[in-house]
Amino acid sequence: MQLDTIDLRILAELQQDGALTNVALARRVHLSPSPCLARVKALEDAGVIERYVAIASAKALGLGLNVFISISLKAQSKEALAEFERRVSEHDEVMECYLMSGESDYLVRVVLPDVAALERFILEQLSPIPGVEKIRSSFALKQVRYKTALPLRVG
Image 1 (cartoon, rainbow, N blue to C red):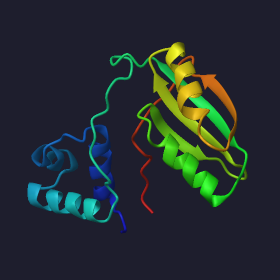
Image 2: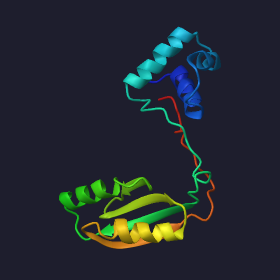
Image 3: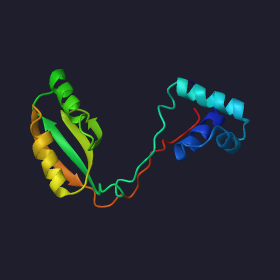
Image 4: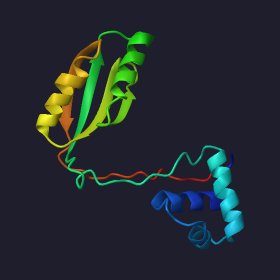
């Protein structure tokens, strides 16, 4: 789908506030409601808009510990990677999981209430996964920037 400047304005507004009504969105992007809704539906149908979510405050929910965990696997087989990915995806604490390039290492971001919960998570959830060789944790001391809105450009 080729995006124009109006599509990008719609996306920018929805990335800031996904709960906007169609009428409010149309007003902000200078369209009438019907064409605005048609454009939003087209963006959804094309998969440009994947879903709408509410972003909760981790701190308000008692999840003040943000930890990046590097996990090395013993083997790089397709089966070992798939099993690790399946097992790590079962845990709500896991916010993100990336297979890093050129290695059998994963970078996992978890949110937890405290260090004791991190210890339990590592010992009871990560360590027992078959093929896990090394686990290294780094604590986020301060969140300098966090955003969910993607950069938008025409082209």
